Length: 520
Image (tube, rainbow, N blue to C red; front, top):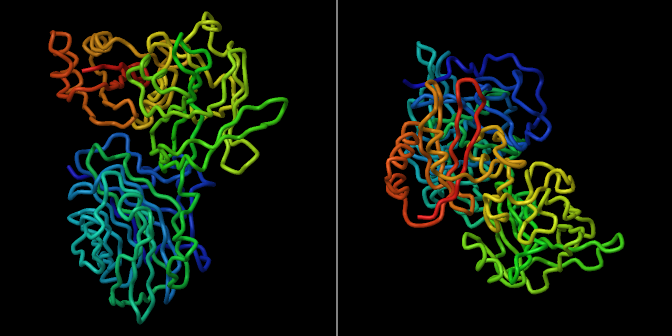
């Protein structure tokens, strides 16, 4: 069954308050969509981390969610916005952004110029579409004629596109795109079209139309949308690298008292959905109330992609020999020494004297029994809470070997559930969910009462998801594993080290995850 929105809009007959000559929304000051000014299936969208995201809890097999807001029209216009898709668009999962309504064919049909991601296209296209409201109330795109072909810049597996589109009466349309993968993070003029149909209306709908299957019900994100008068091409400032499009790393794990012959280390993590350029950051230790030396981060690995970790240490072998799962370990010969008895460390933007975040380390933060124990790392619990909050740190769990350099913290309450979009887990040990034995997880799944739900996700230790498994398949691999079938065969995986996160919802309890690390 196709889940569609019933009469979501009558673009030209909605009574709207007076509009300014331009419109913009960066979602920084609102916590949810409201009607007015938005209309349509606003309940299908939410504001997460100051961005608009499709967020449908119980989607059907095939779905459509559409919203719109009224914007002013003029004889020359510029549309800008940021769109992130956590997948490569296909004929089943795709997006239309309706920019400009130039014709009301009837009370139920409208002609638009729109941007299209997917639906037979390899890139982002500018198209002329006709949108029809059927007698049943469902909506349908009855035609989509290509105006500007974006296939020369195919969309990546996780596309992050900033679009810049202009229209001028008598001259037509232009399209520029900037994509992290698609255009090497440069603004590129995709093309122009002489298509010239001026709208007779003073205002119309800016629409977002998401078409998706079950697995993509939380995979569309939007930000920094704007509509302005004037057909203005991108400026030179826009073409230069915009710092607002770059992420900021966080201090994530500190090893001050390593095992014998092992090395101290500092771990950073990129919790944002933008790349982090490490050469733009530095670290330092505070002494006598000030930072006498601020040390730039090494450039051996200059870009930290979203969800990635980097481990800084004086001797890489002092980490990798003791933690074979360690990822992205980089030698930093001038790494400041971390005192066992305590220190204060700051993370800085390069050439800045005020820290972006600061951690005051004391061995007591490691927990009872760990104050003098060697090889216990101090792990950050949540990157959404301040680094300066001492309660946001705890010693690594025994079940994880007391340390997790270069992969998800054993004490984390959000690193392994971010992509699942579930509430923080129930606490199995310490401040966060511990790593459990796979058989314990399989036994729990096998014994779930009737009416329970479950699912699982497999991650590389870098934090990137490689496989999503539905409830029936999760129960099947757990059952096969308990019957003696090797995990590699039960999960159909290549050799390697993975983290499995299983989420469980019993009839009388909220969702919670379990996790384990496996080597195949």
